[in-house]
Amino acid sequence: MIFIAEIGLNHNGNLDLGYELIKQAKYSGADIVKFQLGWRGEKGDINHISFSDLIRIKEWCDYFEIELMFSIFTEEAFVQAKKLKLNRYKIASRTLLNNFDLAEQIINEGKETIISLGMWGKKILPFTNSRHIKYLWCKSKYPTFPKDLVGFPKSFKKNHIIGYSDHSIGIENTLIAISRGANIIEKHFTLDKSDNSIRDHILSATPSEFKIMNEIGRTIYKNIKIGI
Image (cartoon, rainbow, N blue to C red; front, top):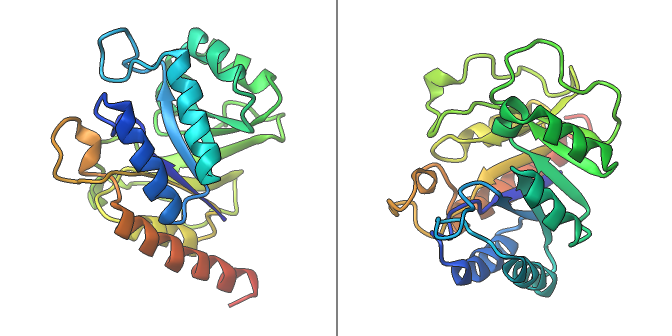
């Protein structure tokens, strides 16, 4: 069972806040923290991350003993990420739709790659011959409300979709996904859901919410594994 704390842009352009977000994600039980690299990343934009910033983020994650992962949005971002020698990469729904060539480059690197399918409208999965790919069911609506979850899997043990990337308000739908067999959960992570700097704060989990999700979710997962 893997829990990913999606920090994304919730640092609000202040990467020093990223240190606290990484620390709180670790304390909340996350296995991985994830940032977005190349999305709104131009100089002066909210998510501009220089290579020296990447080194700092990696050092912070090493210090707190939590794995670092990035969603890769541009070729330049991929070049920078490769220098960090990370264990795996993330391909966001938007990248899969708008830059399929980049997605192929990332897949061809041969590392474990997690792919969200929130904008993938085809019945056939985008890559079918790579064993190192992990697919996440996703709805690319921010936030996602219950009525939007059309097609939410009844089982995550079919069709190679083994996890869930959640944009809902609250943690309930992540727990439903785990009860249906999901073994990867990605949830946005914030220190303050009332922050209006970007839209993602309201659909994120606070440290206390993430901790509850982690503890209950792992128990559900263990119970399913022993046949309950």
